Amino acid sequence: MAAAAKRFETFCKVESVNKKLGIVFGWAIVSKEDGDDYYDTQGDHIPQETMLERSAEFMLSTRVAGEMHETVDGEVAFAFPLTEEIAKAMGIVSKKYGLMYGYKPSSPVFAKFESGQYTGFSIGGERLEEVVVEL
Image (cartoon, rainbow, N blue to C red):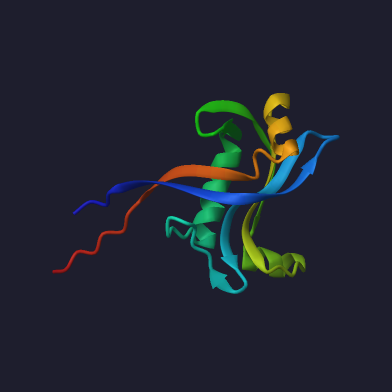
């Protein structure tokens, strides 16, 4: 039996808004927090290796972002995948692992982040559901 595709969205809080650069910083994906696998509000978990592979594909191809999953608005200026392995190699100590993100939206959308109307990033995608087949 083939795996079924499932839409997902994960929401991550904005950590910093840089007015001078017009860039919003935060975690686009969280894989682990405080030593435990991180599950979003829909119960989805994105393993560190999957995050690393998919974020590389994204940054090498599209790098565009959108407003509310509807309108393309701006680009991803920065993305850094922080896995436990990368953190150790770089001498970084962290309680959180995933994809750190710097998004440069249009001025009107940036103003929504700056005012607090928008408080986070919602990353949407599609993944294959694991299907267990008993023989």
